[in-house]
Amino acid sequence: MVREFKLPDVGEGVSEGEIVSWLVEEGDTVSEDMPVAEVETDKAIVEVPSPVNGTVKEIIPEEGEVVKVGSVIITFDVEGEADETETETAASEESTESQTETAEEPEVPADDAEAEEVSTGEGRVFAAPSARRLARELGVDIAAVEGSGPSGRVTERDVRQAAESGVDTQEGSGSTGGPEPTSGGGTSGPSPTSGGGTSGPSPTSGGGTSGPSPTSGGGTSGPAPTDIESADRETTLAAPATRRIAEEQGVDLNKVPATEQRDGEAFVTSEAVMEYAEAQQRAQQADAAEPAEGERVERIQYKGVRKTIGDAMVNSKFSAPHVTHHDTAVVDNLVETRERLKPEAEERGISLTYMPFVMKAVVAALKQHPKLNSELDEEAGEILRKNYYNVGVATATDAGLMVPVVDDVDDKGLLQISSEVNEVVQKARDRSISRDELQGSTFSITNFGAIGGEYATPILNYPEAGILGIGELKQRPVVEDGEVVAKYTLPISLSIDHRIVDGADAAAFANTFIEYVENPELLLLE
Image: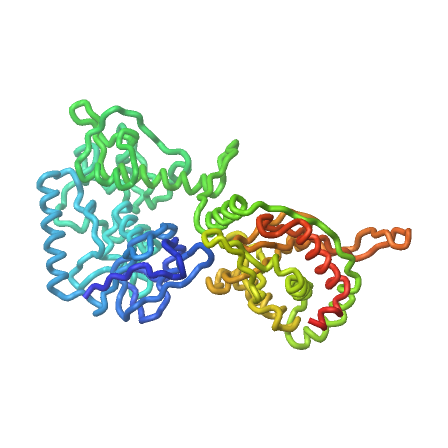
């Protein structure tokens, strides 16, 4: 029995996801709740578990493909093996289709037929689609290849090793003992894609020059990956199956070097198309790995987390009129206090940074200036002032900026806040954070000073009314009693939603915050 599995809703509001990687292959045995794929949502990468015990029958979307929630992404054979009747029916249909194509198009080899699994006298051979395609290109009988992957899975590496060791080719294993049906002339010889080193007519050559094919396993090296031999014709003769392959591979038949001439027209075989497609793929991979000399623009897809962040920024900037207030705190006392507490925190297994002090000072200031702990409900025409204090901490990750949240900061001590901040920040960076841990903040902090810089203009974490940017904490010249002295200073940049927070409110909040970080012992009273 075949069980279809659709991409589930992996988080609130998620409508689509990108398949980052498949953790299984077709033919693998899986158990219920075993992870089968990694899917990227707009905020995190989550593992999708198998809903059943069984065998992976078909993997549908490729890695990197974006699929909608509710789309079928994988199928399972819940009995482990398809029943005999189903197998025989499939084999019969495949045989009939193959015979029909052979009767109508004798010049097209039987190995052009696509098959999800190869039937043999001993059962089925499981192989990845890429391995099956490679076997056709190299002329290898995949049924004769011993698989090294999970559950005996035939991999691309297995196919290449088989080609190098001289495993029977598909042409050689058939009942026809005549010459290669797609060769340009009538003289028999080795398959153009065989692993041997004997020279024969190349399927992509226009004349009779001998030499191994670029895809052969012989010692003669083929052309450089970016050196693609290409033609430029207006018309080309090809069998319907060859045209289908060209369409699937995205190949322009008129650019594929001719295999031979028929009635004055260039004729192209499926092997020539596959070789041309492979050469294009090698060239693209080479270009991606090492941009060509003189290339000035690299195109990177704008999608996933990066696009979600961009959309949120645009929404915030265009929805709320931003105003940013700048100031500086002299924090020698904060530096001394942290240095005294660090050893105690380390004994408890906690790395104490300045962030917990900043968060406690923010909450203390929010309690005195509640306008900044609010949001505007435009539809209802109401300002929502919140009596709880969940602080978001903007975090730079490989995928972009994320804002993990620490709830109820006002009810927690410095060490607990420090522990929770360290945990959620690390989870955001390794993409294991849940959506719940990225939602529900009432005010946010962004520490751009961690990588240098003094002031910025932070963009609101909409719909919040305020965000505090922290510059680099370091010694700077300060005038004290008419003299210039070195003091530890902390630059701050406070952005507000000017629809519900006035500039005077922002300045008052900043002054209160500065009072707390300049005199951290006051936090003991909160």
